[in-house]
Image (cartoon, rainbow, N blue to C red; front, side, top):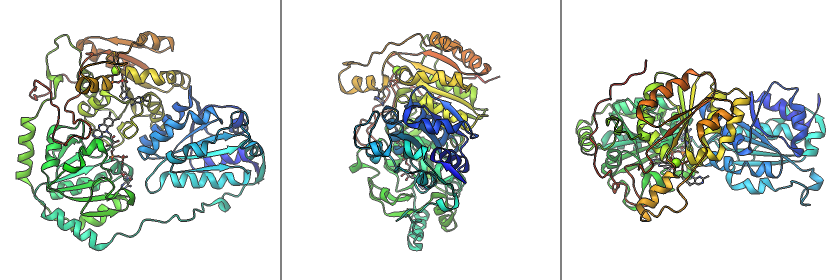
Length: 574
Ligand SMILES: Cc1cc2nc3c(=O)[nH]c(=O)nc-3n(C[C@H](O)[C@H](O)[C@H](O)COP(=O)(O)OP(=O)(O)OC[C@H]3O[C@@H](n4cnc5c(N)ncnc54)[C@H](O)[C@@H]3O)c2cc1C
Ligand SMILES: Cc1ncc(C[n+]2csc(CCOP(=O)(O)OP(=O)(O)O)c2C)c(N)n1
Ligand SMILES: [Mg+2]
């Protein structure tokens, strides 16, 4: 069957199981857009190509499948850079397709020519410049395989206009991936497995560090078996949230810069760390020289380059986490660590400084109130929360208690402001039956709020909670602690977000007191379609605890007047 390169592109995407593509057209990708009309793929027209990449990313993170974005050459392609880097840092499998000028024009500074494969080389797992129609199918097949296999990540395919217009015989089977040097992981060494099991069985103060790899691997059940059988508490990274249920008695909570104090103390006092699919990011370890000084360390990780990269370990087990745990579990003996649990509980009692949601309504509206109330209102539903970057992101991690995998989607490694609204749109397309909330700061919202128009045009039902503190809050917090409250360029104004929502043709609600929080959430949930709630919160609130960058993990800045944790405040959703 003879097809054009443009037809082969869509035919190949259909065969890869793609149903949704997020994109924006332009000259160099026009042949592909023309052919799209004949294929059963839903194209969602974004308002900025950065949005398309975050939508593909949100789509991928909500399901574990591959998200796809498409754009034209030149500025369309360069607008994808931030989204590619975001996906790269967080191991998210997306495929981005860009149009390129005709192959004979390459290198001539042609109109909208840019070397996008050169630009994206360090922020993609792999990329392709396709100059002939007969290279399209194989590039697509390889791109999908590379994006989702091993440690997932983004792949870019840049297709010249003549490759889209030219035709050739389409042969799917002949286009099977051929990737020189690609090999499956080495088999696990029996000796290393036995060594790991012996360390686990002998430990007195062990802690499991559960990361994003738990979700990527789908190793939730095996992780739980390990924790329960050996009675080991589990600390999660920001991206590991949801990999182990928040309500499980062995779940300690989040570790790291804004982790719970007792979690960081437990790590510092541990005699064994079992790191599962996490990469010892600097937000997690603090000062490497004083990190977990008494602990032996076992690292279960799919990317061999991560072993001993930041933290030297005693045993490294390279491979898919679920496969490693399946091999390891038979050698793990039932254990009990009552004294260790008591020790952590005592630290927790002494350091319980959060739960301002239990304070009476004293006229102040705290972001923690809002997020905790949102959790109470939505916890019974299949809810996905997508956060932006900043203080609200950390409060979400602390006050929204995630039970299920893939129920929190957030940009961790690159920390990309503007991520939440488009990623929420992608997540909703991937899981249409889930309730999807974007929690965004007033700064990040203003970066990509144009994508509300996308949600409206394509009837994508996302709810947006703006945590509006009138500041670039997280940066203001650093200025507060480390720059003597000199608030350079962090006070931030914005439009009336409720009126803005109305201008997009969707409901907007403004909330200024705690009493209004729940009614607003209920109203937004009750509306079939996108809605925006503008929560005008306390302006100079601070995320505690905080480990200053590079400080010892146990050297946390604490809330000046500790508030002792109390029971729930009695409200329950109707
Ligand atoms: C403002 C801000 C504050 C932050 N504060 C904190 C904080 O306090 N605490 C915190 O934890 N984070 C924090 N972060 C996030 C932090 O920067 C990192 O993104 C995060 O810690 C990384 O978590 P991770 O290592 O679990 O995930 P990733 O970075 O996604 O790494 C996952 C690891 O799992 C491996 N993997 C993938 N698939 C598999 C598989 N199938 N089997 C085995 N292994 C696999 C990968 O190779 C990789 O090494 C913050 C971010 C921001 C923006
Ligand atoms: C694209 C981008 N630019 C700059 C930053 C640096 N930065 C991190 S948090 C933050 C402030 C975010 O402000 P806002 O969105 O209002 O959220 P808040 O911290 O107030 O909750 C900034 C500027 C970033 N992470 N991403
Ligand atoms: Mg703000």
